[in-house]
Structures are given as structure tokens and as C-alpha cells.
Image 1 (cartoon, one colour):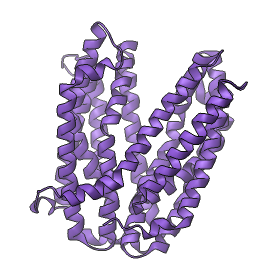
Image 2 (cartoon, one colour):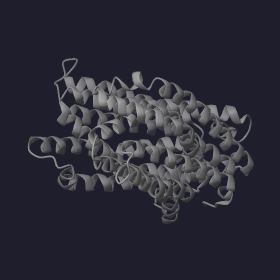
Image 3 (cartoon, one colour):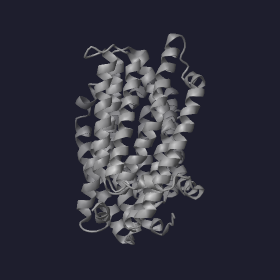
Image 4 (cartoon, one colour):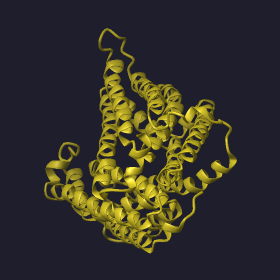
Length: 454
């Protein structure tokens, strides 16, 4: 019965399969968003210094788990292809090896994080008592790394096998535990001692350990129940295949975050209004984060549906599914972007108290909302390429438009030019237009249908 549930993604109604895979992932993305917001909200009661530490360590943690996210992309591509081809023993073998590889990477990074924590924290320039606070916070976070890796990879297996509701269940519990403990441990509710800033980090660690236990239990009760009965000897061949599929995904994530840092640097060089512009960019990205949720939910669903249909020998169905998902994404995102465009002021007012920052945030949103449909196309079709194993193709499109269009154009328009912050906003939507078009051409070209990933 479990086997058949996965195979159903390659037959029947395409629309129903898209919905089956997408709605649970939308809730998962929303839960992750709530956890991040809660951490920042609770930290706000402890002072701006703690908020700064939470933000900095959060960014560090994101970079550390990039490896897990990359392994999960390679795992989804390989496992979903095997499941679609009904090679279930191959799928279990790949899944077992991915968990082992991820666990070894997590152990290595955890050790490195503990040994180098002084050097890592020094990157933020914290000094005095705040430095020790940052060290304590990062140390606790580091112990959450290994269970987080296993949670990420287990959820990748659930998605690849079409059991996305298991991912929803696991992440609902993880998020609930994390959010509840943020308040209980930080403020000392229910007769517990107040742990202050340590409570935020400890909440994450406990939530991830809980998630790891739940995922291991779900693996035993799902189609992966025999995953622990095979050989646990690491295969160099599999590591090579996962690496070849994953490194472009790492470069995409690193480049995108580095690109945002460069945008802040460009805005800091403005003759006037640089602080206002940087605050507007921060506010705008937070608001856009809500719109990104359905896009990335569809991105993860697209990877699985593409991989399984290619594995089943149905490349035309895979392509049709990709186009339909892109159309759904554009329609859904446009419906979300339109009210933000129209009511940009009331949307921005709660997080932009300064009037100049509010005005610039409104201008940012009304410009960038025009590019959201192209962002949806790029993210969703990029997910299709990732699921097909064409991770390099997605990398060339995203990294290329970022570093050869967005950032140079933003600098030229904003710094030597006369447009200031407006030039940066215009560069952002221009690059997104080209990114969406380039991803469409890459997908339409069909080269991804012939990529061999075994």
C-alpha cells in the first residue's frame, strides 16, 4: 500500500497530484516562518543586543545547514527517480546512504563549530559581555545541528516517496515545541526558572531532538520501514553522485545570500538616505517572505513530481506538470502581490515606524510586486530542473542573472547614477524578469529530460 501511494504521483490527475504535494508543504513553510518570527519577537523583550545575536547566529546557522539542504536536493532527485521507476530497493539503499552521509557531515560540522566557536563569533565583532552571550548562544545552537540534519534528510525522503503528510506532521510538532518553549524557557513559565537568551537557543535544540525522534519513528512506520536493515557502509559512488547534484544548489544559496549583502553595501554608499534605504530593504524582504511561502512549497513539490515522472519514463507528463505548476504559482502569487501593491502603506506601517522609512518601503513594495510572477516562474521551474538532476542549469540561470545583471546594474544606477535607492529596486525587478525568462527557456529546451543521474 505504501509503495502504491508513491507511484500514484505518476498517474491520474496532474492537478490532484500537484495539490496533494503542495498544500502540506505550504503549511510546513508557514510553520518555519512562525518559528523565525517568534525567536525575533521573544528576543525583543531581552533587548536589542540579544536580537542582534539571534539574527547573526541565525545567519551562521543557515550557512551551516546549507550542506544538509544540498544533500536533501540530491537525495530527492535520486530517490524520487528510483521510486518513479518502481526500483524501491534502490530507493531505500540511496535513502540509507544519504542519512549516513548527512550524519557524518553533521558530526564533522558540529565538532568544527565547537572547536572554532571563538573564531566564528569574532566575525560579528561582538565585544565585552555581549561576546560571551553570543558564544553561549552559538554553543547551544551547535548541539542542535546533528538532529536538524537528520530531520531535513528524513523529510526529504518522505517528500521523495510521496508521503508529504509525514513531513507536515513532523514539522508541525517541531514548530509547536519550538514556539512553546521559546516562551516557557525564556520567561520561566509554569514554575520553571527563567533562562533568558539561553532559552531561545535551548528551545531550538530541544525541538530538533524531538523532531529527530519523531522522524526516526515515522521512518519505521512508512514505506522506509526497512531502511535500517541494510548495509551502513558508506558508498563513495553515491557520495560522488550526491555531490555532483548538490554543489550547484550550495552555490545558489550562498550566492543569493551574498548578493543581498552586496545590495546592502551598495545602499550604504548612497550620498543621501542610505540608512533609510537599508531599513526599507529589510522591511520589504520581511514582507515578501510571506509571498515566497507558496512559491517554495511548489518548488519542493515540483522536484518530487518531476523526478518520479522521469523515473516512470513519462518525460512529457513531467513537462506538462511543470508548466501547470508554474501557471498555478503565477496566478497564486499575483493574487497575493496585488493587495500588497494596492495597500502597501497599511501593510508596511506596522514594521516601519519612521515616516521616511515607511515611504521608501512603500516604494520598494510597489516596484518589486511587479516582479513576483517572474519570481514564481523561476522558483517553480527551477524546482523542476532540480528534481530532474539539472542542478547546474538552475545554477547558471540564478547565479548568472544575479551577478551579471542585478548587482552591476544596481551599482550603476544607484551610486554613480542619479536614481539612488530607486535604482537598486529597478535593478532587482529587471534581473528577476530576465531570471524568469531564462529559467523558462532552460525548461522549454528540454535538455533536463535526458540527464542521467544514476
